[in-house]
Image (cartoon, rainbow, N blue to C red):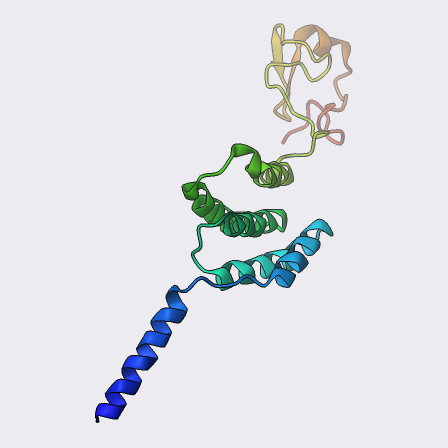
Length: 174
C-alpha cells in the first residue's frame, strides 16, 4: 500500500510539474503558420496558430502575444469574426497597440461591404419627382405609388410608363 502511495505522489508531482513548467514553442510550426498567413491561406494559418497557442499554454511572453495576434488575424481574415473577436478580447486584456488591430478592421469593413447594397443600387428619394428628379412641386401621385411634379405629369401622355417601373403605365392599377 505504501508503494502505491509513493507512486501516486510521484505521478502527481510529475503532472503538476508538466502543467506548470514553461513549455517550448515548436518554432517550425509557428513559421509554417506565418507562411500560411503570408500566402493568404488563412484557414490553415488559423489552425496552425491555434495549435501553437495551445501548445505554449498561458504564457505572458511577447512570443505568446504574437502567436495570439496571428491566430486572431487569421480568424478575422478567413471570415470567422466572432471567434476572432474572442481572441482579440483576450489579447486586449494583456495590452496591445491599436495598430495591431488593422486585420480586424479590414475584415469588419469587408463584412460590412458584403452585406451592404452594391454602390450602383438605385436609391429612391420619396420627395423627388420620378421624371425630373427635383423636389416635388405640386405632387401628383401615380397608381404605381410614385409621384411626379404636376408640370412633369401634364407633359407625359396618359399611358406613359413610370420611369421606376418600366413595364407599368403611370395610370394602371397596382
